[in-house]
Length: 259
Image 1 (cartoon, rainbow, N blue to C red):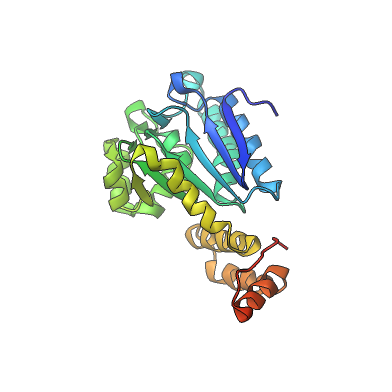
Image 2: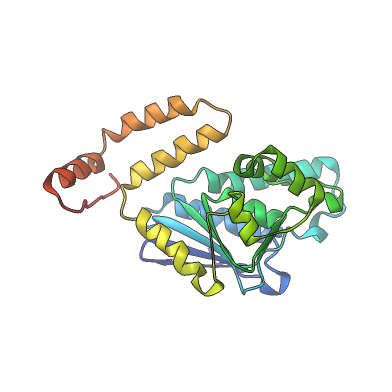
């Protein structure tokens, strides 16, 4: 698929996805969401992709929110459908992907932008980034999992404060409350995201996928312990497990094949 709003490039088993609407502060419109859905599906089914870095074009914004003009006259049913479609094809698709997604937050991450970052498995922010969920200033609430994922990441009290005040917080404050994993200078943002995925690339792909599934189950009101037990057992049937044990015994680096 030829993308109009994204730049997608696969290098050394890392898929780099840049939302390329810099003049619009990379706001999420329907076309951009459709393209994101396509590239997420591609990442999931392509063995050469071992991880994804998601970022925004330019240095001002990761994603400054959704394109409000597109849904300003929606009915309640249209609003509900909009949220469900985004959940299924983009936000939940990222969270449930077998490949780890790292959000490289290069500026404002507001509304749908912060919700997109929170759907990723890990977040690295530049030191000038600002994060927030301003939806209540529009008479809305966060519509792409914002109320759920923010609560999971920072706890109920802080989540309610951020959502109901609509205040932005700094990257350093976001790191303090666990909203982002790391804060780095803008010049180091991509290299830090790469550093994380380069470590993940050394691990067994099927085990990485199983771990993501088990952790997701733990935070989504399901029996995470049962999922962990099942996924742990499945790992014993993989060639990667046999290779990992052999490499440990032979005191060498493992050569995982994702099988």
